[in-house]
Length: 213
Image (cartoon, rainbow, N blue to C red; front, side, top):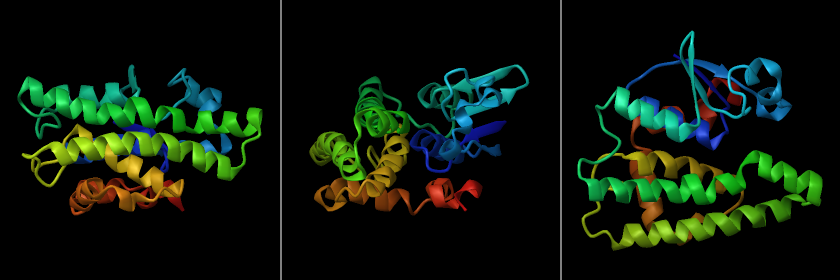
């Protein structure tokens, strides 16, 4: 498999974590968003949307959109599972992931921020304030859900990483870049500490990637 991604992309980061947790290796192909390589024809021939990540699984099949790719991984390589067994528990884990994947990340994504800069004249202070607004809103909800779960273990759900952790850790990394004070969310901090003890999360970190240099 070939993984087309960018070291600092949150969606790429979450997919790297999922691949590592599944014990799967890929050929790492960097797509440099800083020089808009994702908008060039070579990459758009693989993914017409021009977004990372993309996972080439055969000469004739390229998977796009990190939620779809991670669901594919879960179905294709079910062990270890990223979702719990029960329907109620699966819904809970999916909801935690969706707070990041649907309500925080998309409106803080690079193309949104570039539009704010270029079309609306936002400076970096304004960009950081914009991102902090949506991160804070989402993290407040996640923190409340984690705190209310009396059965929660070291991770977002239980004592093994799930889809929720796969989504949360890259968003924490992004939050630091936007200068968000993470000390206000102790449950989230505890989950991060547990995740970062695991090699799957360590190896997926942005600064550990070959294009981070």
